[in-house]
Image 1: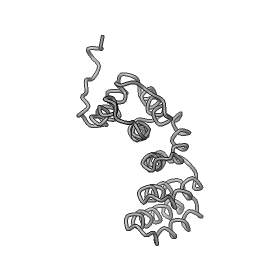
Image 2 (image 1 turned 45 degrees about the horizontal axis):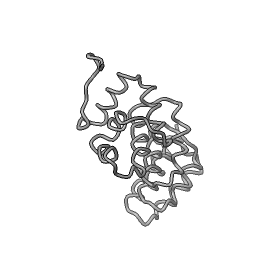
Image 3 (image 1 turned 120 degrees about the vertical axis):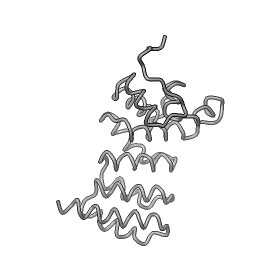
Length: 179
């Protein structure tokens, strides 16, 4: 029987609202643990898949191929809920075969200041522009002096958004290193 005092959400509520309700039920660490498990390829049940995937989870629950979606949703959830035990899975996700998962893990790394400059230097040459841009943003947070050269090289990237991310990240990195 459901707890009458537990917050009720719908798959059409915002991801943040769904994760807040999950964290209220299971604790922030518990929700982050489940998100990490999804990122690592585990199954966390239909209810949690609806929490992280919203209405899109129904397709998978109705038989559509899962592909990379649960892993991506697990990584994305870690932008909102966090426990330090998720850090190794997020860093490992930077090498995921799906570019969407690599991109999301780089975003989580930038937000949580995870990983090393070497992790992101490799991603700055990824075949997908969105991964390269996310890597540039992560370098702004965890990069070292050598990362400034990497970001300068990205200013000549073939993709305009990557160049923009590199320029902003280069400025942010230099400012952070001067502090």
